[in-house]
Image 1 (cartoon, rainbow, N blue to C red):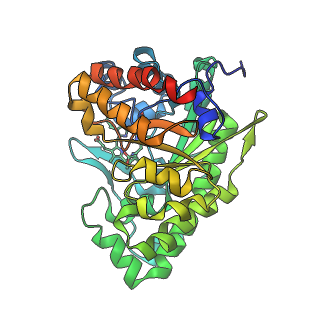
Image 2: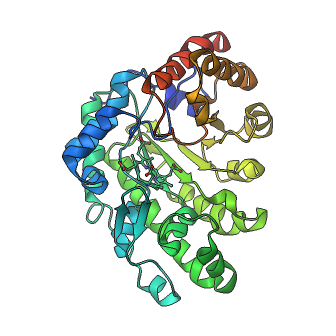
Length: 354
Ligand code: CP3
């Protein structure tokens, strides 16, 4: 059961040779797939889907049945941790995530508990164990969490945001409160990811979706510092293999050297950074994941293939690249186009690995 049939993804993250470039898609399980919508309808709401290990496993496997993907990603959400801290996560139709009890004062921060990953978040670990068993070693399973800063934006804003005024107000007017919150969230994320690893995740990724809205200096102090702490606290080996960790900061192109300094194995790139320049800057230290604009998947097959070819050529010869979208797949992308993308990465990348 521990035998991994396709380990390209793990090998590329460690910059070891592979036959072709591995590929997966951020948000590969989701509403662009009709079979996802059908399973989601059975579960009821989104959190009920996450809390049902069998159904969470089913939607994790759906994209793998359609496309020759090189990794599976746990079906869950980054907001499970604040929910487990008691903030009351709910989803308003068409409005995205919301919290019924957002964090407003330092008193709120002081009251925040550190959730026990096998108790309040036990449903996530059950999903990991169920998925891992059902994958039968076909491809590795990716576990994940949000970064402390990105989770803090949702916890203080009470949901998604455009200008992040509430959390930035806390950052500038009451920095000690925000630091205490980030400290607690970082501790929670560390034990959460370690529990996912013990439950069977073979690699982990931290999504810092909103790191790019910070100034150059504030990013280092309020986001990267806490991701660094998490990397330091992670289990780096399990089942006799390294468990690679990928840090993805959307809009993080200016900090690649500092991100590599955390000791992470790979950096996720959005489409605004050139992958050839990124490789020159940090490719001798870390692997790179990315970085096609997800909107390319609206184009004709020939245009999708041309973009894949361009990115492969930019990265160049050799290992250390995990092909991905620069952010999540859009929910109105035709699934066939995702298929063209995945298939063309394998077909067109072969010459770069000779
Ligand atoms: O397939 C996968 O990639 C695994 C599942 C996954 C989800 N969310 C499922 C989901 C992952 C890795 C996430 C991460 C996540 N969640 C992030 C970081 C990555 C990113 O996209 O930047 C963020 C910021 C969130 C927070 C979140 N959760 C938002 C903003 C939303 C609403 C988005 C929307 O499209 O409505 C969610 C809900 C959510 N998480 C859905 C899915 C499939 C849609 C829920 C549904 O209606 O079925």
